Image 1 (cartoon, rainbow, N blue to C red):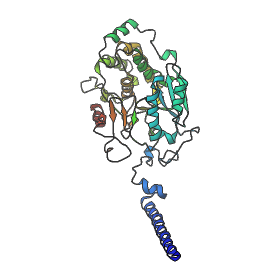
Image 2: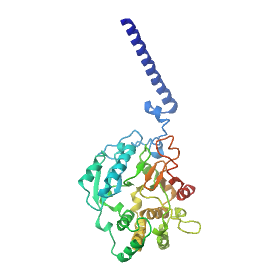
Image 3: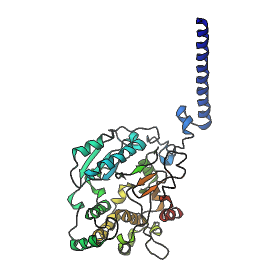
Image 4: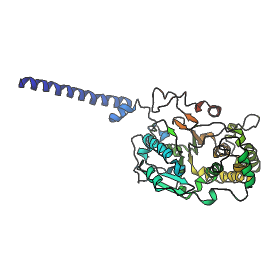
Length: 379
């Protein structure tokens, strides 16, 4: 009886040894054949990882590969942060966003979060955010000159526009304050002064994909100034005179417009405004662009025109017109590999329903079919 048990145990150990040898030599074979190393390489050849590509920061010693991890308190390879303008009652929506960002990407990168508010943040809000991340979180208030009416605005005229408006957010005063702040002041906030890049985030959004590279390193390594994900057309009643104001600016400052630009994306063959814009609730930006002389001059020109209040000019079309005037296509990156949902619109990379690192239905993520996205791809 004992001898049978010994024989059975010997056979079991022999089987385990054979399996171990098979896995060991199989790994060596695949590693040699595909130029990978170790067991991670065996699986990554089918993983479609972008992190290994030099374009996405692979192989440059920057620590940006998919297995890298940045210490929460350590120095990051890029001076960057995830930034949101929120209110205390956005806590639940922002917690959902941060939970997905941490699971999909930032849990291993630990880039800091900078959260801004026009009112003091509550301790409940601060605790609710910090519970979700090891990364540094900073909370700041808006400076008075960046939120509210500038002295030259006729507030009676602004009120009449709000009362008669028949478009989304048309009656909202605070929404107009937000658009003006995001257009001309967010990059000036003291908490952002030490940053070179920012990734704008919002409450109640979804990120459908595991991101296995560092988008900030992608931006830096390739000289990208602006990154986007969704490009719809703006609702005409909100920007009735925005294109006229932009044309006036270009006529006054032709020296600021480089020969290689993207103006044909925002105007058609007859010179009419296409209203194409990058939906700025997802944008990753080299902040030197917003801090540039030409961008500041453009914002000041529009701010003086009063369209934030006499119409409802949004930060998205203003950012987009600035990109079109001052940048070339090689300076702008379409993050079409990042699936993203913001209430009312979403982008889902092709094939994500069946395979890959995204889980979403491309038929429901229809932003890829917008005329402005198509127009971009044709340029």
